[in-house]
Image 1 (cartoon, helix red, strand yellow):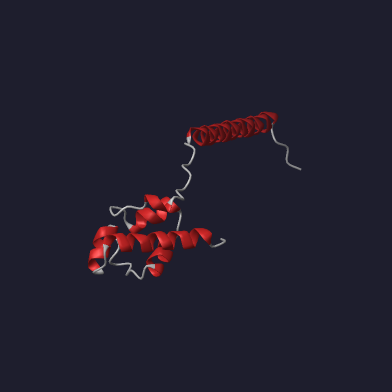
Image 2 (cartoon, one colour):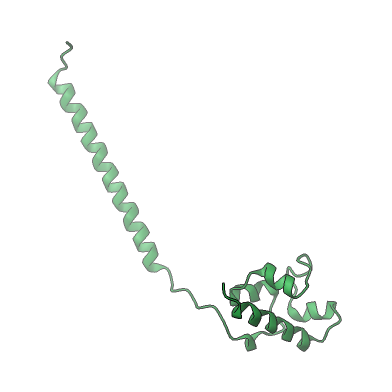
Length: 120
Protein backbone atom coordinates (compact mmCIF):
# COMPACT_ATOMS: atom_id res chain seq x y z
CA UNK A 1 0.00 0.00 0.00
CA UNK A 2 1.41 3.32 -1.14
CA UNK A 3 0.97 6.25 1.15
CA UNK A 4 0.84 9.70 -0.34
CA UNK A 5 2.09 12.62 1.53
CA UNK A 6 -0.63 14.83 2.97
CA UNK A 7 0.85 17.91 1.28
CA UNK A 8 0.51 16.34 -2.20
CA UNK A 9 -3.06 15.36 -1.42
CA UNK A 10 -3.92 18.87 -0.25
CA UNK A 11 -2.18 20.48 -3.23
CA UNK A 12 -4.13 18.39 -5.71
CA UNK A 13 -7.39 19.36 -4.03
CA UNK A 14 -6.44 23.03 -4.08
CA UNK A 15 -5.61 22.81 -7.80
CA UNK A 16 -8.95 21.11 -8.50
CA UNK A 17 -10.81 23.74 -6.49
CA UNK A 18 -9.07 26.55 -8.37
CA UNK A 19 -9.83 24.95 -11.74
CA UNK A 20 -13.47 24.50 -10.73
CA UNK A 21 -13.67 28.12 -9.62
CA UNK A 22 -12.16 29.32 -12.91
CA UNK A 23 -14.63 27.21 -14.91
CA UNK A 24 -17.58 28.57 -12.91
CA UNK A 25 -16.40 32.16 -13.42
CA UNK A 26 -15.94 31.63 -17.17
CA UNK A 27 -19.37 29.99 -17.48
CA UNK A 28 -20.92 32.90 -15.61
CA UNK A 29 -19.23 35.41 -17.90
CA UNK A 30 -20.46 33.56 -20.99
CA UNK A 31 -24.00 33.43 -19.66
CA UNK A 32 -23.90 37.13 -18.81
CA UNK A 33 -22.52 38.05 -22.23
CA UNK A 34 -25.15 35.95 -24.03
CA UNK A 35 -27.99 37.42 -21.97
CA UNK A 36 -26.66 40.93 -22.56
CA UNK A 37 -26.52 40.37 -26.33
CA UNK A 38 -30.07 39.03 -26.40
CA UNK A 39 -31.35 42.11 -24.59
CA UNK A 40 -29.57 44.47 -27.00
CA UNK A 41 -31.01 42.81 -30.09
CA UNK A 42 -33.67 45.01 -31.69
CA UNK A 43 -37.22 43.82 -32.03
CA UNK A 44 -37.62 42.38 -35.53
CA UNK A 45 -39.63 44.43 -37.96
CA UNK A 46 -42.84 42.68 -38.96
CA UNK A 47 -42.94 41.50 -42.54
CA UNK A 48 -44.79 43.63 -45.04
CA UNK A 49 -48.18 42.36 -46.19
CA UNK A 50 -49.50 45.29 -48.25
CA UNK A 51 -48.82 44.34 -51.87
CA UNK A 52 -49.81 47.81 -53.06
CA UNK A 53 -46.40 49.00 -51.90
CA UNK A 54 -44.56 47.00 -54.60
CA UNK A 55 -42.70 49.41 -56.86
CA UNK A 56 -40.63 49.17 -60.03
CA UNK A 57 -37.27 49.80 -58.30
CA UNK A 58 -37.61 46.65 -56.16
CA UNK A 59 -35.70 43.49 -56.99
CA UNK A 60 -37.03 39.96 -56.63
CA UNK A 61 -34.65 39.37 -53.71
CA UNK A 62 -35.85 42.53 -51.96
CA UNK A 63 -39.48 41.55 -52.44
CA UNK A 64 -38.81 38.05 -51.14
CA UNK A 65 -37.18 39.37 -47.99
CA UNK A 66 -39.68 42.16 -47.42
CA UNK A 67 -42.77 39.99 -47.84
CA UNK A 68 -41.17 36.84 -46.38
CA UNK A 69 -41.68 34.84 -49.55
CA UNK A 70 -39.18 32.24 -50.79
CA UNK A 71 -37.29 33.66 -53.74
CA UNK A 72 -37.52 30.38 -55.72
CA UNK A 73 -41.32 30.61 -55.41
CA UNK A 74 -41.32 34.12 -56.87
CA UNK A 75 -38.98 33.15 -59.68
CA UNK A 76 -41.07 30.13 -60.57
CA UNK A 77 -44.44 31.87 -60.36
CA UNK A 78 -43.20 34.74 -62.52
CA UNK A 79 -41.28 32.45 -64.91
CA UNK A 80 -38.00 34.27 -64.35
CA UNK A 81 -34.60 32.70 -64.90
CA UNK A 82 -32.67 32.88 -61.58
CA UNK A 83 -29.51 34.00 -63.38
CA UNK A 84 -31.37 36.93 -64.95
CA UNK A 85 -32.85 38.26 -61.74
CA UNK A 86 -29.84 38.67 -59.47
CA UNK A 87 -29.55 42.47 -59.49
CA UNK A 88 -32.30 43.59 -61.83
CA UNK A 89 -35.30 45.54 -60.62
CA UNK A 90 -38.86 44.94 -61.75
CA UNK A 91 -38.69 47.64 -64.41
CA UNK A 92 -35.61 46.01 -66.00
CA UNK A 93 -37.17 42.54 -65.82
CA UNK A 94 -40.37 43.81 -67.47
CA UNK A 95 -38.34 45.49 -70.22
CA UNK A 96 -36.44 42.24 -70.89
CA UNK A 97 -39.75 40.41 -71.22
CA UNK A 98 -41.15 43.12 -73.53
CA UNK A 99 -43.91 43.64 -71.03
CA UNK A 100 -45.46 46.80 -69.68
CA UNK A 101 -43.93 47.61 -66.28
CA UNK A 102 -47.31 48.18 -64.64
CA UNK A 103 -48.62 44.84 -65.93
CA UNK A 104 -45.51 43.04 -64.70
CA UNK A 105 -45.84 44.66 -61.27
CA UNK A 106 -49.47 43.51 -61.16
CA UNK A 107 -48.35 39.94 -61.87
CA UNK A 108 -45.83 40.25 -59.02
CA UNK A 109 -48.58 41.47 -56.72
CA UNK A 110 -50.81 38.55 -57.73
CA UNK A 111 -47.97 36.14 -57.01
CA UNK A 112 -47.42 37.66 -53.57
CA UNK A 113 -51.15 37.52 -52.77
CA UNK A 114 -51.32 33.91 -53.90
CA UNK A 115 -48.47 32.97 -51.56
CA UNK A 116 -49.97 34.93 -48.66
CA UNK A 117 -53.35 33.22 -49.00
CA UNK A 118 -51.85 29.75 -49.23
CA UNK A 119 -51.71 28.06 -45.81
CA UNK A 120 -48.12 27.41 -44.80
